[in-house]
Length: 288
Image (tube, rainbow, N blue to C red; front, side, top):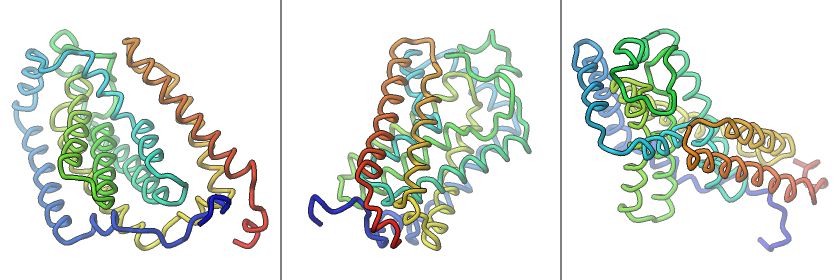
């Protein structure tokens, strides 16, 4: 394709990243991990080890509070979505898969929070017994951790995409380690029990597999290449930017990172508008 060719991409994309998720080896390993995580989470909730583990983590912090505050930002659903949207060079390459994973994760997490209605750690143990960081939520359902779900699913998608592009295992392991640290930050800041994060990680695997099979059956990528889909993405980047303008931490450094991410989201939205609507190939659009 020449440089003057419009950004409308082919309908059939390289789907090596999807094939990796639905491969037999991955599905077998994922099934074991999902079952193990949920069973271990139930075990933790059924005895006092969940509370004692939580107390131990907060009485002997492994990392400084500013690091946990920084990692905690990475588990925000909008931040995770922004990172994933930025890894695709053009709309309609990964967009459909990313949006389905994000939507399914949101539905499953909020539904389980409502049905289970497990109290937050601070409401049970007391704020005075925890080293709370950045004013975590004290009310509302705790199980499962939505931040852990977002972090792990984001990490798994990144690993699948990078592996399909030939990146080395060391890089993939680094992405996985960072995702796990981001997920665990929800325990460190006092927002979730260890059982919540473990269950959220297992739920992330389940949601990712579900969204992958859905994507294989029916993709929305062609719609995201048309004016309506592109308009939706521009509006979505605007909403992400607005969300990130609200400070989630008292630390100036973390707030500056939020503003930087908000600026990147706005620029991405402007980039989409400039390249797709500034010189819109209306003739091609009408034919599609």
